[in-house]
Amino acid sequence: GISPPSKSRTAISALLKKGPRSLAAIASDTNLTRGQALDVLDEMRAGGAAVELPTGLWSLGGAGEAAYTKGASLQYESDDNGMYRFGVVSDTHLGSKYERLDVLNDLYDRFEKAGIQRVFHAGNWIEGEATFNKHDILAVGMDSQLRYLASYYPKRPGITTYAVTGDDHEGWYAQREGIDIGKHAEAEMRRNGRDDWVNLGYMEAHIELIHKQSRKSNILAVVHAGGGSAYALSYAPQKILESLEGGEKPGCAIYGHYHKIWAGNIRNVWVLLPGTTKDQDPFMRKRRIEAHVGGALVELEQDADSGALVSFMPRMVRYFNRGFYKDRWSHHGPVSPAERSP
Image (cartoon, rainbow, N blue to C red; front, side, top):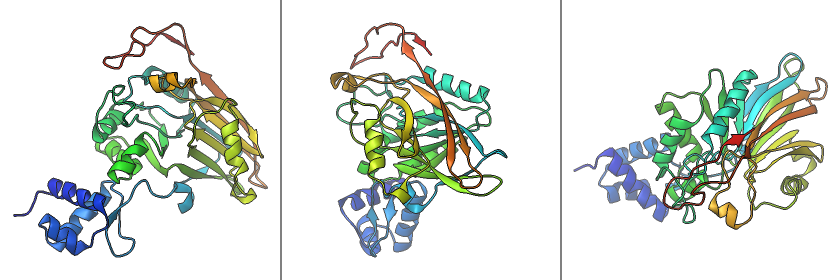
């Protein structure tokens, strides 16, 4: 008999994890006709699986190419005066016992009060799962964490969040399961009635900033960078920007991953590290990595004649502990966060 669709998807996914297969081999090994196997492959693609047909053989990819290699993920038009105003968050790590939903919601309250319509998320929206954090998560499994994201990520009238996918944390699922986790997260949001979350793609997305009057443009890069923290806050973005050729540089770059708050100008690029809405966890504690808990509101001014971003005004919001934690480093139960002061 023919396997139910869900079992067929699981069987085909398990096959492709072992290596590329022809359609005939997939059909034979799963007791499906070629047409049924192709239907399941199409369903897997629609659901976010990174199913590919690069050389005549079906395969299961990982996270794929960085989003910027496919061109701008989004066009963003200025107001009449060439101004852009948006919120920025990063490294929210929903599903971790050390998440700070109170902080994240407070930031969105600030965005709403300021009339912000767009928030850019620089990656690591969920905690993901690895050997070193398995005791520190509230939701187990990819689908469970994405449902948690859909249930608890802040929603405010008129605000849309545009999120890039990190190579780690949610990216671990992409690597292990061969799924486009950003696309899968967006689909889960829609299933939960949420149209306020837009997937920007993997690792680095470029937003085309278009001056409303002159149509001159520039690039805002939203990046989930890699590597470890450095003693100097500016060191990591400096090395990234130093590695780029002159024509590759964006006008403004937002770098997630480092859990730090910092802003400046490097090689004529406005740079923002927006911090995190996750407290220092045991992994960070052992490696003496500080967590800057917060986010930012940004205002950019674009020159009509050249498209250059001539002014950058980040309003950074930082939240501080007022005390230590009870059961702070628990690996077997909930943690009790101290009161926060913004």
